Length: 404
Ligand SMILES: Cc1cc2nc3c(=O)[nH]c(=O)nc-3n(C[C@H](O)[C@H](O)[C@H](O)COP(=O)(O)OP(=O)(O)OC[C@H]3O[C@@H](n4cnc5c(N)ncnc54)[C@H](O)[C@@H]3O)c2cc1C
Image 1 (tube, rainbow, N blue to C red):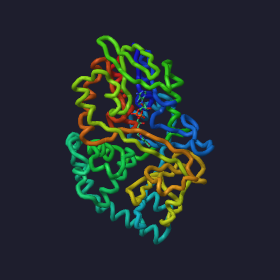
Image 2: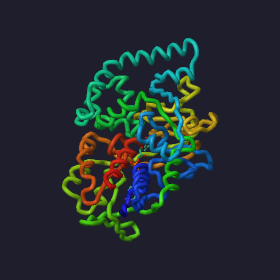
Image 3: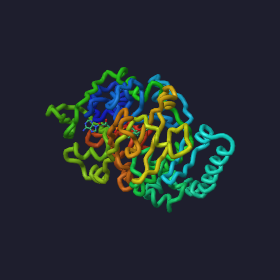
Image 4: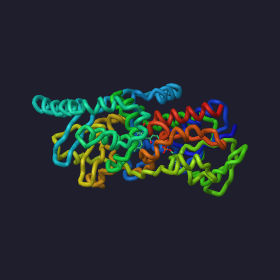
């Protein structure tokens, strides 16, 4: 069967791999000049745009939870190696206060200062017990109908930390998190938060390279699909250069808020499931400015550091350990901290577009999944599950199972 896949991010590429393995004739159409979507491994699928660094640094997707069962088995099948990492975290308030995880406390303090840091952390754990019990008792199906604000209740230090974790996981502005989907948040908290992490030596893009090498299909870059016309027996794609191509089936592996721009004559059910989705345009910065830490007694930053600024919250993640490079000089990936970063120390600026996981959009995903196959059309994307790489893999497996 001739299958067109629109979108060369994780979900599109994994779908291409699985369908190709099943013997289908697969073509991937990616609008940007590189494959990988939110995977940006400098000096693999991206060239630094503000320096001549030749290091393999991640500007998007970096690490994965140990509970990503399906993604791990894909990496095993592709013979891509991965290794566990011990990740610390810190929350830095603009009034100078801070709370560190035990890994980060041990890295930065000794003696009394270490004891003081542990005490602060354990007080936070104690204060979080009731919230933990409440979250444990709520099912994902009940959470589907709740916004994050309703799920978490009033703002406390514990709810603040969970919201920061969501800001990090889904690159979503802290101020938009009240309307965030509790279903996605709870799935993440329950399955991943305490499970530990792993990284891919050689960069995340390594597994995309493997898929390209193993695939007999075609990968078209700089090929934006403008229209998808569906007929009884086939699908016609109109590409940005005006070319029209005929396929048996189409897989839409693009963010949900972009789908209706492409689909000609969407069904009422497709409209119902997709029209509430909005996009989330964000910028990440790879940089070398560690002056963010100057107001705090911190010499060793961590991989999940959250900073409160005058305009809200952002994150700063040290990349050295996660990218397998020497500990010095330090490199960071930051989001929403432009005001704190010296522009002369920027290595690369990356623009991303993700779905905005608002509760009112997310709640209709299962209906959309049930439409897979109608009008020779299938949907894939991390957004159809956990919003992360495990979700991208699961959505691709679902489509591959249906297109036997
Ligand atoms: C900064 C950042 C960091 C992240 N870090 C992690 C992490 O560490 N771990 C993790 O598991 N997840 C992480 N994520 C989440 C990540 O988005 C998902 O894990 C996954 O990469 C999403 O893949 P996808 O294929 O669903 O979507 P995308 O990566 O968004 O891919 C969609 C692709 O479709 C293309 N496209 C859109 N419209 C068209 C069109 N009309 N024609 C042709 N092509 C089109 C886009 O250019 C894009 O390449 C991160 C996300 C961001 C933004």
